[in-house]
Length: 131
Image (cartoon, rainbow, N blue to C red):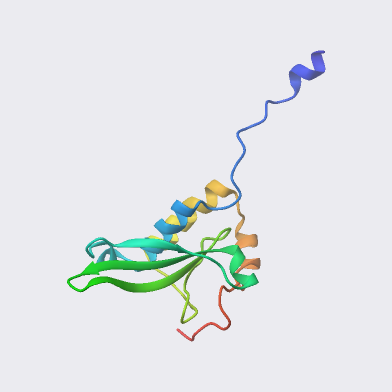
């Protein structure tokens, strides 16, 4: 009985994957302030069609203009690393704000920098575009 008292209580389970809301915040951070200021800017879910896409949240960004809704782009966010890709051109996005937010979310999920490096080659698309 005394031995049971020494066993630590289970800590709250950490979610290993980013949430969809966190992934959307990463896209907005990657795109910057200009995109945030577009009227009625929003991100809609896109369903994966290829097996390699299953490790990513996929989004279509849009905003309203006088003629209706305008598509601003398609984005993919890796569910573990938080890497953000401009999906159709297969280009990884980078920004200071994005890196800061990735660091925060990676700490919450418990992913190590070694694991981030190991998964760096995970692509949601066929071939990365040269930057």
